[in-house]
Image (cartoon, rainbow, N blue to C red; front, side):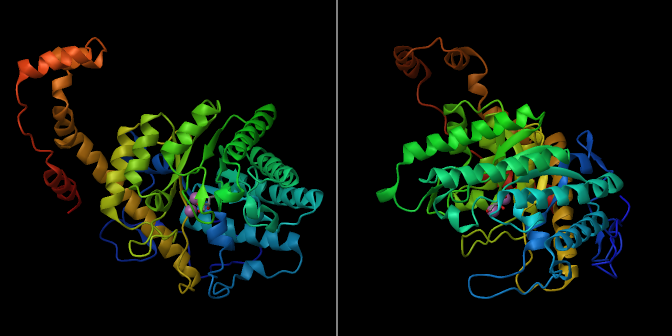
Length: 443
Ligand code: XLS
Ligand code: NI
Ligand code: NI
C-alpha cells in the first residue's frame, strides 16, 4: 500500500511501517504481522481485514469526565467545517496507508461536523464522500463498515429508535439514511448498528415491549431502504450490556440473537462483537464468539481490551496473547468472520500524547493478532486439542447416546439405561492440561 499524503504531512518522521520479523527491535516495525504470510489457507491480511476506527484515531481527543482534551490534533484546527473534514481525511489516509491498514470504519459524526439541519448535514457527508472516494481508489483502502452516531446529540438522551418521542426517532432515521447512502457510495462492505442509548435508565418510565418493537421496525426499514439502493453487504448489531444506558436492549450475543430471531431479521443481520463489551456483560470474549459461531452469525469484531480492575469500557488496545489465542481458536474453528474484519475500536490513553503513540498502539495490536493466529492454527492442526474435546463426547457418537441425539429415546428409556449402564466413571475435564497446551505453543 503506497503512502498517501495530503497537502500537509501529519505524521512527519514516520514512514511506511514494514514487516521486519521477530528479531527486529524497531518499535515502528511489525515483528509478526507479515500481511502476505499464509496461515490456514489465507493471508493474514485476508483473515483479519484490519480496520482503523475513524472516531478513536482521528476524533478522539483524550478528554474524560474529569478533564478536557489532551490530544490536540493538527488536522482538527481549520475553522471551516468542510476544510476540517478534508484535513481529517488527509490525516486518516496518511495514517492508514503508513500502517498498511486495508480498511477503515466511520460514524457519520466522525467524518463531518454534525449539524441538526438535516440537509446541511447530508451535504457535509456528501462533501466527505466526494473527497475520500479518490483517496480510496488511489490507496486501495476499503470501507469495512459505516454507522450513524445516534447517541451523542441531546435529543437522543432517551434513545433514538427506542425514544418515546416519534420526532426523535425520525431524526435518527434521517441520520441512518445519510450514513447508509455514504456507505453505499463508498462501496462499504457492511453497516453497523450499535444502540448506545437504545435501552432504559428506569423501568418506571419505560414501555420496554413497545420500545423493542420500535427498534425492530426501525431496523427493518433501514435494511429495506439499503437493499432498495442495491446494498448487498451485511448489517451488524454490536451488543453491549450497558454504558451509557443503565440497561441496553442489545445486551450480549445471546440476547441479540433472540431479538433477531423474534423480529425476522436473521437473514440480513449478523453480529459485530467487541472484546470490552463481552467483559462488561460478564462473559469472556471467546464465549461471545462461540455463541455467535453456533448461531452462524459471527460477522465482525471490534478489537480492544478492558481493564480487569475497573470493569468499564476502557477500549484499550489488545495486547494479551493468551486471551487472543483462545478467541482465535473459536474464530478459526468457526470458519472465520462472515463479511467483516477486525476493527480497532480502541484508543490510546489520555496521557499518550505523541502522534507516534497512535502507531505503537496499532502495531502492537496487529502483531499480537498475527502471532495469536499463527499459534491458534498450530494448536488446531498439530496438537491433541480438538481430539480431547471430541473424546469427551464420544459416548454420544454411537449406541444409545447417538439414539438420544437422534431423538429416539424417551425419559423412561433413560431410566432403564441408567440401571443398565450403572454408575458413570469419574472423568477429568483436564482444564489445566488444556491451558498448559495453549501455553506450550505460546511459550
Ligand atoms: C461503543 C461502541 C461504538 C461502536 C460503533 O462502545 O463500541 O464505538 O463500535 O458505534
Ligand atoms: Ni465498538
Ligand atoms: Ni465499545
